[in-house]
Length: 236
Image 1 (cartoon, helix red, strand yellow):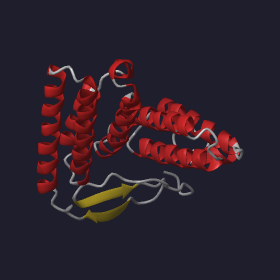
Image 2 (image 1 turned 180 degrees about the vertical axis):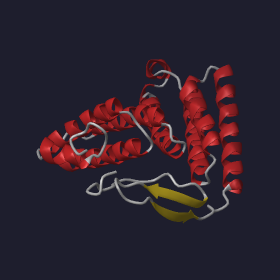
Image 3 (image 1 turned 45 degrees about the horizontal axis):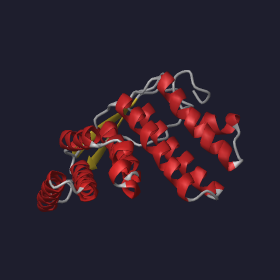
Image 4 (image 1 turned 60 degrees about the horizontal axis):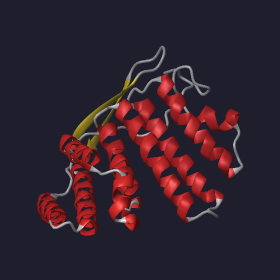
């Protein structure tokens, strides 16, 4: 980076001692050592949650065999929600592969909203809810495993789904909500840049960020976009 550049964003630290090297044009590299402490033990919580999820899956199978489709979907969504909670615990203790496995399991198993509405109309919205929650945690997995494409895909899934749900249930939502969404997009954009995302991917995410900023009524591309530092970007 140039001597005039500044850095803004998070760095995906692993448990233990991390060495971060800052390179400057015409100057000696600067090495920063940062320690990330061991996380708390969550093995008991995870074991209980996995057992609960299996009980709910078994209950959903029983309900389906007995043609009680409302109970089938209710138990199924509860089980998938518990799987997402387990994935979140895995992320907290640094078991990112295990978290990804749980989340992929949920996303592949979720039924379509149309199928749910045929037998349990008032549960149909839970499809998007579970999908959004799973993708939100996938952004954490992607960040800490340096997977920019997964981070972009997950971000462009969960934030629009949350917005869709919020606008449907709160049609008179204030501009503060879009400011919150813009802040979340900004966070994920900076994360995406840090782990090596492409300029094209940054542009995709910036388009969503700009859309939210426009909704607030306070959007100035010269100011808003200059804050993001990436090759070829306005703030380079």
